[in-house]
Length: 385
Figure 1 (tube, rainbow, N blue to C red):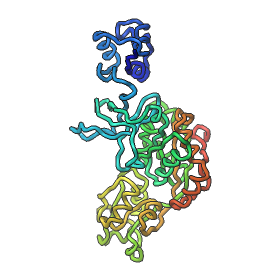
Figure 2 (cartoon, helix red, strand yellow):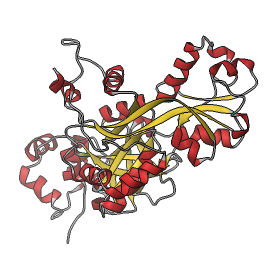
Figure 3 (cartoon, one colour):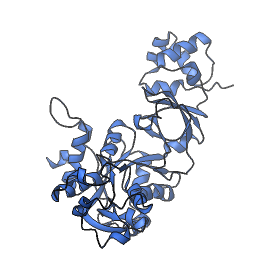
Figure 4 (cartoon, helix red, strand yellow):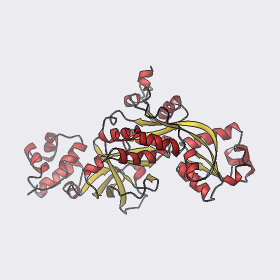
């Protein structure tokens, strides 16, 4: 008879050896091995000692790992204060731990079956207990992608189509948020859209802390592996009927048209602010400047639903919603991948999809995007010195 438990899983998450755990729990190393293998069931005292040593409850530590697992629940994924209802969640392995993120409306695709149902255990420690709906082996083949470029939804789907058995899940995030999630270990890939390589590294420096000694970012930042996705235009998205009358940011001072904006930290917000500054238009002169939504697609949807008249968003968003588009600048979307993740099976599956002819051909018509150089890796900051 086997006695399922999560002792080994949690011990490895905590970075403990069997000997260290045995000492902390006051039992022998051999006993720990037998319990982890499910060959013996510990008595109440031993179970309590193991749970205390690992910072778990007896109930969660000795749950069946085939149906239940504990996971890191990032702060961005925590439910609102006072919310205890279970949430649908996607699950992936990142840096040797399980990371769970909620299936929000801006994840792609939002209605796809998830890996688990999550219940928050400790919001301060960002821990959740997951009831599994899919095998853990499937979660190990999942890659998380954070960013706001509409192409990321297409890439996540091609990861499933091209690399059979693997799955990409896209979480909408601003440039700043995506880089922060990469640093926090809550995503495998951060997508940043910027005018050029110099702006890319500046975006990274703006978000990540630097060493108080050297004044430089952490060593792993110098080893980041940026990979080119594609080039596309960012610009004014508007209803077709106002296209002939719209003359750029100067038109917004008339208070005639309503703007829908993006949050601070997004590339679209930075472009809008630069356009307003160029035209010497103060934000308070713009009707709707404080009205923000969370993605390029949300900007276009807001205009399409006649809740706003104009906004700054990606050309692909304008095309998908049948809206007029006036370009402002070209951006390149880069994928930033932590050096520890680059050789994992899940990330390699995403890169296989990225370089496939099918994805390249569809992406070129999706935005449209300029796919010249798609998949090309840039030099790291360390190599440029």
